[in-house]
Amino acid sequence: MPKVAQKWWTLVVVCTGIFMLLLDITIVNIALPDLVKSLHASFSDLEWVIDAYAISLASLLLIAGSLGDLAGARKVFLGGLAIFCASSLLCGLAQSPAFLITFRAVQGIGGAAMFATSLALLAHKYRGRDRGIALSAWGATAGGAVAIGPLVGGALTSGISWRWIFLINVPIGIAAFAATLARVDEAPRRPGVRPDWLGFVTLAGAMLAGIYGLIRGNQDGWTSPAILTAFASCVVLLAAFGLVEHQRRDRQPMLELALFRNPALVGACIGALMISASIFSVLLYLTLYLQDVLRYSAFQTGLRFLPLTIPIIFAAPVAGRLSGRVPARLLIGGGLGLIAVGLALMTLLSATSGWTVLLAGMVVSGIGSGVTNPVLASAAVGTVSSEKAGVGSGINNTFRQVGIAVGIAGLGAIFASTVRSSFVSDLAGRSPQLARHASQLAGSLTSGGGLSSVRPSGPGAQVIASAARYSFVTGLDRILWVAAIIAAMGAVVSAVLLRTRDISSAPEASVEHEEIMRRAA
Image 1 (tube, rainbow, N blue to C red):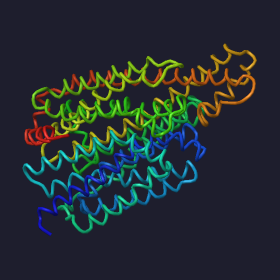
Image 2: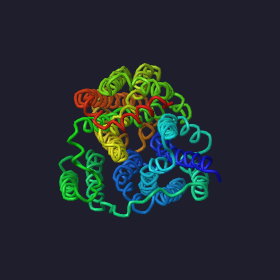
Image 3: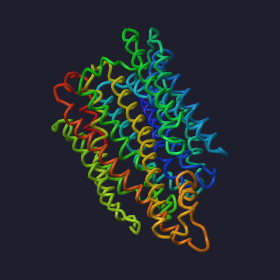
Image 4: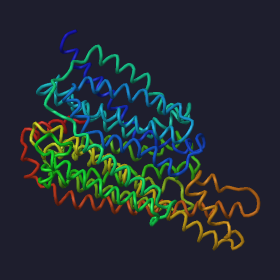
């Protein structure tokens, strides 16, 4: 096959893999209410379905790049495809929440392998202007996958079954695997690289312990031995991770701590963490509101997310054109500021509101996300030397996944606590006779099947349903404010730390990525 045709096959295969693994970050949100009914999942189960994928993806992303250097990017990419497809099949066949959560974590392993090696495969096949086009297509695919996830998830869940949000990956992945075997060349190896397994174990362990504590805190008690042990383990393992990486500074550490001496990289990573911990973590709870409170189907819910996702798609290329003339600190700080404003606008919800109250906030948040995301990626790469561009990108993407995992768990803890206390007090005020059942009903509401679990028939049913709806909206209002504050803090910190002189210290990377941003669509 001519080399020209072969390199475009590489682009198609890589973009297919990236599309699948990033689509699975947002597509699952829409199906979560159906998982509750089908698998009898609890609220904490829903959080783990999202976080299991994010934790394994975040903790393995950097080490998967080292494996690609050692064994070959093509081999690791193929291995990632195989793991992702097999685990997708098993997720689609799951009969229990524990089974699904387990193989969501395995999915993350496959996703990390594909994500970490995708840019290496493109860099091997493309040079000059073609590389800019290829990387722009990669970026557009990544942004598009996240943006259309809710609509695709809604269509599959409503049209067929929630299981097809996973099963659809199997035929696509098999085709991509076959095309990779037949059409994609191996990238050059770096045999001297040794994966930092100890760094991986300590980072993954710290994330797992911290997320466990946040998710189980309300149920087990924040001062219970199990929760205190989880948080203490998280702190100890994070300290151990820092020590391991410091000791490996001359032997390819998983995370080069010396890079964080550049405040601009710190700013870009904080921006990535905050955008994921705010708007992208809130999507889970907005989905539950639209389906559980307003009773929309999965597809109807996906349609109602379009005011958020369409602005993301259209704002990204505008940000790309502006990035050559407007400092990154203004674009990222301004974008996160818009997200904060949009989330604050969504707090206008009340127990009697329709979904259109969310409309203005969704549009503003979507514009902010579209402006922030591509500039963050470019800024992270621009803070390191050109030969470490992949490292800068990997660090930034790791912080994105950490933000989703921590955001889902942290906001979930606040949401569950607020809903429970609000329900108990509101039901007691509405009906003293029902007050003695309030704690039991609140437990069902926050740890079981949501509002559907507190819709009894008979005397008092309407009162209980009204109290449940009110408490749910109160909890949603609380975490929307928290997410708005997180985004606002990210805006301020990013604007302060992302100094232009620190980003332009790597001119080769900056020029290339400025070209990518101009071409992004």
